Length: 396
Image 1 (cartoon, rainbow, N blue to C red):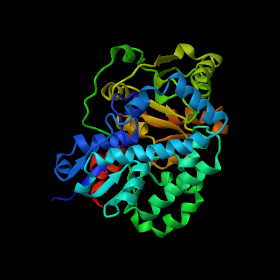
Image 2: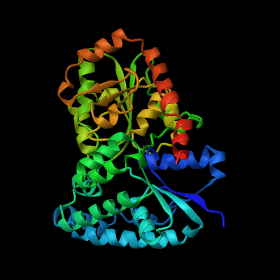
Image 3: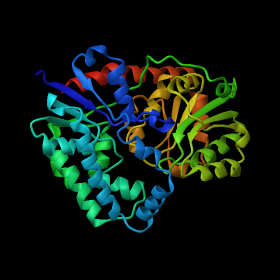
Image 4: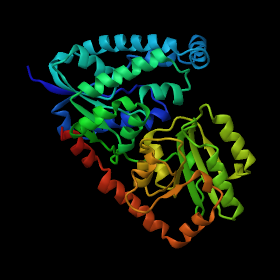
């Protein structure tokens, strides 16, 4: 029987705008849709409906009660839920006849663990997309209560996977650093296995044709500076800082329009209040419906600045998309953003320097905006192209 490579990204059908921008989904799309010569040699699958029922009931009363319990009382139920996930995914991968493959590229650390334990003869390349360790993600980013039991379990999963997988891939250097900073027990393993580690910088689908969304694009104002943000409004973003930055532009008589394509989240009210309190509501256009990628690309091709302030980010795919369509990114000065800077055609903002608008005024006076846009496009072509992405993927 012909042994082949199986790629197992974890993406879902019926996605919303948040998932539409996810690195994992984009990897699947690039692999599966744009490179026919790859498809001839690899086999692909993904979780079409395997946990769709969980996704659909996430906002029901029972799950809301469970989430409240985990966040405010105890994280012990997460221990048992993790066990359930492992069992569930074990039976899921059995359905795809995994014995037909000798190499699996897994975007899911739980799947990697199952294959390592139960299918020892299969080589596993693990790609990790977290903002830190599994335990850090649960307790610091999802705000679940700390639990000794949960920490031991999640740290053990990471230890087994990184100690035994065939290759270790990350979407950026900072993704690796973030993991080690939040689970120091992995430092020795990663240091020992440096030759097995690859940084798999992702790219964008440049073959997708833009489609105009008249409702949105009629808000672009010619001869003004048009800013655009595309995000889920959650704690990962410094949503309170962008209105403050833009209000400083307004106070200096700089004409702008901010087009905000957003997915409401737990910081929705803060964002709305900050826009009103800074007095920029007449300069902002809100759009909170699902927007497909073709419409996003059309919008990006007509704006000037892509503005996104992160509290943390290992690699922002939307930034690359905005650059390809001639936007100048204005980003918070954090590692995940700095890592994709190739030329000095970006603006990185420190949190304590948000009120000093002189640097921005000097920037737009001293630079040819059109030229900077062209530089950004070529940065993507030369450093984050589909071809580079596939070359990294192929060089196993």
